[in-house]
Length: 464
Image (cartoon, rainbow, N blue to C red; front, side):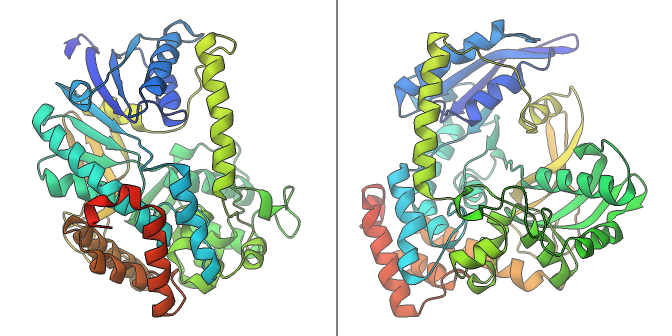
């Protein structure tokens, strides 16, 4: 990596999960929108053919309409080759396959437990963590040996536990977790400002917020548009929309068949209950609440206007993305530079000293949230500037939502420790304590054992 005036050249990015047919293509597009950075992205994936396809696709972006810089892509066969001397490491992997995720999401349904996502919390999130964390232990050790000064950007869920594992194995690692759920809430609040205050064309970045909590269960204790406190504005909006943003009959009211439906009805209900703005999509928020609140049944989900995302949908979507990959590789479809709205590339530029940025990240608690445990991975704003990432002092979790958040934080800490020790009984205790596990203890154990059996090919390190 070298500095050349106002540009930084020869940057090396290691992309683990480089065969991705989603996040990787978005990164490729975003990298092309800034003329002050350039370099090479090394793509590593256990599916080497997928990485090779992305090598071809990525290099096509250099000739796309609107390209402002040059990035080269190279698929590599080993983790060590990808990481050697990397300046930045991006983690975006799928732990297991969608067959394992099918068990994560749908096996609990026979016990009346429904999950709208199943990758962060609940039974599905816990089994996914069991598969993912051992992989992250290997990755952290490899980063320590191959590129200890690299900045590590994690997109994989369960976000909190992945970041926690990186720091547990390599305490000096410079890692943080990125999530766009707060961005979505900022966009929603921009719509609220437009409707209630009559201000046209409000941009997300104009909504200034103070997020506190844990990933996917984050709350805003401040929200402002310029000098306007948005809490009274949001309260007005919620009172005027008792049935969600779309009302009783939203334009797309087939909630049971819309995999990513979100009408903000859960978010607004939580505001009415607790007085603070929940800052994630309804599908995620519902999974951190008591199982009878929003996920009691498919009928309750339909009533609250959000979607249960079946893994069958993910499998069908994967087939479409595989077909698109083939078209992009062959040239039948052209690559297109189109901003994703993610902050990853701007975070890279800020760490290189090319800009300065304040945005939400997931990092260990250094006191930025005083009433959550030190070392627990929490989500708050942080300041990105040349060579540094500094958390913003976000203050305490408000009292009204503290019992909800601290329960989740405690479960995550318990689960992280049990997985590190390969303590299956300790993992089960965290499993049985989860708010979504509403069945009796005996059924909880049967469910846990069944889910472990279904994904045992990835759980050999536990003796399962």
